[in-house]
Image (tube, rainbow, N blue to C red; front, side, top):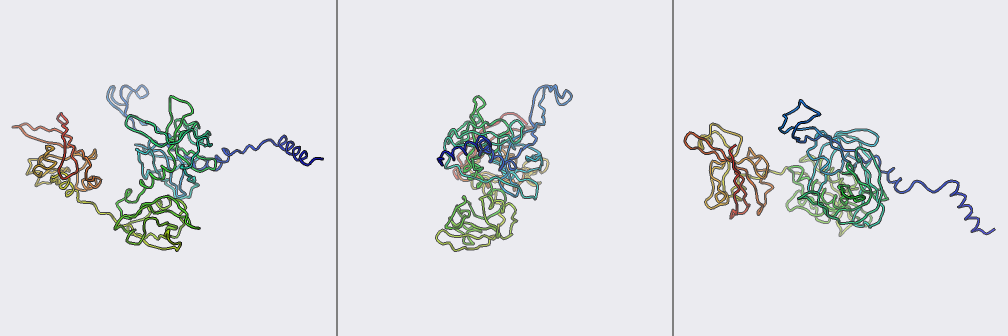
Length: 461
């Protein structure tokens, strides 16, 4: 009998008896990742107006009141130490954040860093256990038409799986009047309310994006932030210098291989920083931290989050010009506060001091208050051109309340030459027995010539 005929007959009998393989790549990806995708929930206070028939005895009939609203979204574990990525809008202004896993276990969580302009948030579970986590892929080689899988919690239906293809890449969408998300992945995998913050995966189960938005007026059009964008943003969001008042001096890139070695590339080293003083250079590849291999760029940041000021960090690394493993020990140093008073004088040509008893008496106030007062302006300087004068009280800088020199220093630390700064000013004047109070918003440019413009806000307070 013909061997080809026999083989074909056996294949037919096998398929007819057992059927086709049902464990498709989509099934396999779900089985790999179902225990790392989570439900993120919390409470928000939202202002409502008018009469609330569900609570007829609460609040004013016509005045504003606040209702506690439950918010739901998705997220996923990206590090075994219990770190979660989700969308920033899922946790914005949210209290009592809770993360629920597929098995029903629930953990409280706190926001480590969030960037609303990128719609990315990084959370930490309040637990010491080790968690399964999702592996990061890449998004610079995505193919239009390739299969993708989205897992999330649309409308509270936990661990819902949808599959589709990549419809397009590098899409820009307008989320609101002044907010755009750019360079997104477009997919026809069903994404609904509650999917926000969930993973978009390739058929290898690797993260290629985070689902973030849908077109409510269209079907089968959803969007995800590419994983490379997420990684680039997190390297900025999680820098020790940004999270805490410390000096380290390392800017990290992505994982990179050199010969048989794989580690985390040093993107840059800050001049005169602890890292530079210990000999680490741009382009070096970090292999181990405190003796533990580096397997992801997140390993570095997670290690830094737990490090105390002055605690040494042991780093094993190689230089691209050689495969010899080098070692260094670096200590994070405390970053001193800048002199806020000096920066205000340099940038805006005015002097500011706390309103103590002596200044209160000098400027006619009843007593000292926790507020900063203008004590002098330099002729033709920026503050004077803006109309500021001795005796004015500085209430806010760039929307943040200030009451102490420490507040001033923290805010002025973020101001660079050429920046425009908004100051909310309170001026109290007397006319006979009458006392008048008025607020002004003043814009000052942080340059020595003091280019400014004045915006009065009418009305007494």
